[in-house]
Image (cartoon, rainbow, N blue to C red):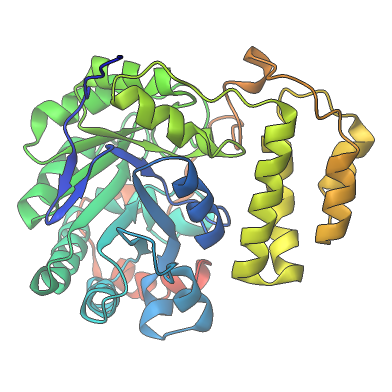
Length: 384
């Protein structure tokens, strides 16, 4: 009989215990209810919904309420909130916690996209330490009476000359967060280059609360290496699971000391695509569900021999019957292709100069002009 040994203890977030210390990173347009269910069917962990803006949630827009909706059997229920105004973030978290809409709330301070950072949000926000402190404190205060733990996800800073992660981690810990997750890149790196795992190790040495590592996790072996090199308490997986929800089975096996890994042939991949389509239709309806599925096709088929015309047709699929016909036309007896199916997937590109409000870097505190500008910031951000 084979015995296994857990390589990490369960992740504890307030009253929650996550037996496999793996978190699905919230990704706009990807980690909807359908994809989260698909991932849960393959493995264990904490699966975070798409980011929702605090203002939209306070206004109870239909899309924001859809984003934070969960299946009846989804537990623990996790949502990520974005905001730049402490009062609005606090009000949004209060809705989530007081109305029992989630068991865990994560705060977004890691988004590097210009439409967020140009208003001082996402990865740009921790530079204003007073604003960062106020937002995290407001969220923790709103959630605490209901026993809902709050965590933060952030980047190392704006660029190499404006790093904030050690200070922000300490501020968040002092405010009462249950854990801190670090994507070990700056906003300027966007998704390019190599994540600096040494920053995760430094943050772990700096804090007492659990530290979760994120960045360049494409396989279970990458996750094991990150834990070994940094001492982090768990991992956050984003782009690495795009088109391969079975990565969570690999991660669960790895963290429980098992060498077993999922290596699907194309027939198994096609069955997963079909299951994903069913879940998308159930969640979003036939038209939107199939449209949203299209972006996943290139990720699923990475490394497999599929002709260009067939790939293009799958990327434009519009009905379940059409999908069935296209999948049946594949060479389903193909085995797992190995290295060509591994590694980088999703967004990459090169470094980008962060787009910031004019004069944002001149001071670590928020003046009146910036405060007025931030009042409008959430109106320009999608996600709810």
